[in-house]
Image 1 (cartoon, helix red, strand yellow):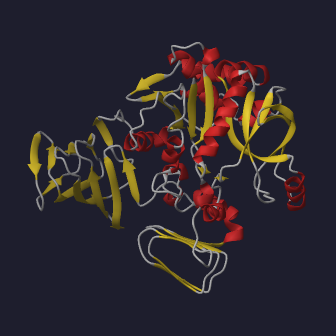
Image 2 (cartoon, rainbow, N blue to C red; image 1 turned 180 degrees about the vertical axis):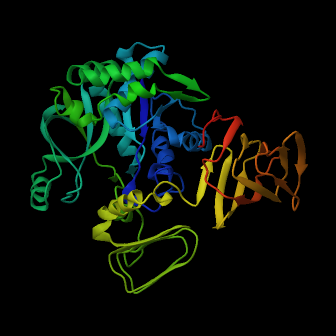
Length: 477
């Protein structure tokens, strides 16, 4: 039995301003109409002996992940929430332990297929054939990694040197090699003995834990305690926070694969990319006759080899070559394509200044829908709320602000103090400071409300929750 374990905990800072801390690249539709997470799950369709996936994600992304799974009719075996990132080795360890707890099969029969949620693979058939080859090796007790057949002397990836044949298409792993310089990468490509390290793995559940315990016993101990302390919260599995935080932070490569004598690599030639920066995203999408990739309302004149992305308004450029232009509602980023790795430095500057643009887009998603901050000024803020059919906001109160609500579309059920009443289109109400209130959408179409806030402090942390359908009572997310 193959159990896909999808790791969806990354932040994707090099793809800012589209990718944000609370809305990272794996949750964005960057290459197809589906998000990268949805595409990762979609390429498993049709595989034999493949069970429901287990998702490991950041706690802050839980509702977005659950909604994206619902959109593609994917019912996971579980969604494990990481209270903080500890890299891939602990994430896979807690997934393995959770599978042992919940599966009715012997752990020797469970083979994990570990997939990052933010990869592009154009040839699904080639991917599935590589997984079949990996399954044969993993079933025989090997720790399998998938190596990408290189097509250029790439300096942004680590490499795997192939050893003797291990049967079929697989080879023993001779060594893992850090990111090389240009000349060394060219030598690797010419030799034909090196593959890019993809970060995808396959192994039996019990074998991963046994070998990891040999090389990283403190990690296994902390993860085991975190799983023992885990609790169910709606459809999510919350790990023990202090125990998981105590785990050393390390990748599967460093913690295990570079130390074991039991590793094999299966070559994968399937149009793969980890979409690690804007240049690699440009290479992953269809370009025009001038090798420009445009998304949204974009007008280019005399430009070549550019990636231009518009989200909310027209973007126009003249005479640019090898540039990236990305526009969102609250930010515009322009950079030479060759410097796209350095976008993370912009994120570091913004983070140091405490700017919200690091974490949030102007439109912020919540389990009940979303809100878009339309305008703000001294002592006021205007938002557009969109509430999904059947959804309900928490019963809450604010210490520092009052609110006016105007229904634009749909019907709202309003709780205000001891009152409960309905509002339809073009009707409004006022929520005085300190009054307990709630919005619900009892209808079958999205409810849109314009909310005007006024007061001395308008931050999102001025929320006192009394009741919440989504288990957030006492929280501000």
